[in-house]
Structures are given as structure tokens and as C-alpha cells.
Length: 42
Image 1 (cartoon, helix red, strand yellow):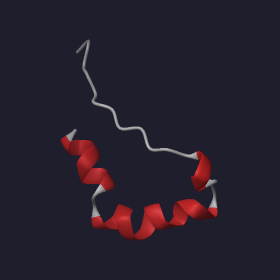
Image 2: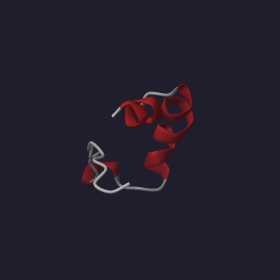
Image 3: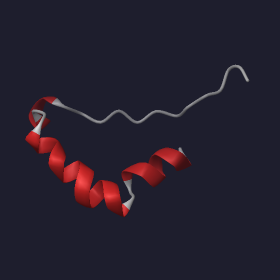
Image 4: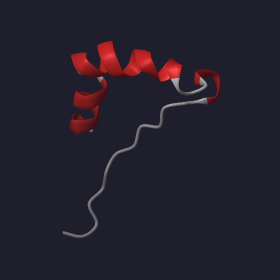
């Protein structure tokens, strides 16, 4: 989860990527899914 939090709460994502989403997707029909990665094989 730390990697995902680092991405979604980074300054770059919050100021450049996330605000641009409204330009190419219908935000009223979109939700963010947050999941925890589980390694099953190495």
C-alpha cells in the first residue's frame, strides 16, 4: 500500500495528472479502486 499511497499522494499526481482526468473521462461514472497487492509466487 505504501507504493500506491506514494503515487496517489505525490505532488506530481495531485497537481498534474489527477486534474487532467476530467479532460478524457466522465468522472461522474468513474470510481477509484484501491487494492492491496499480494505476492503469491516469487
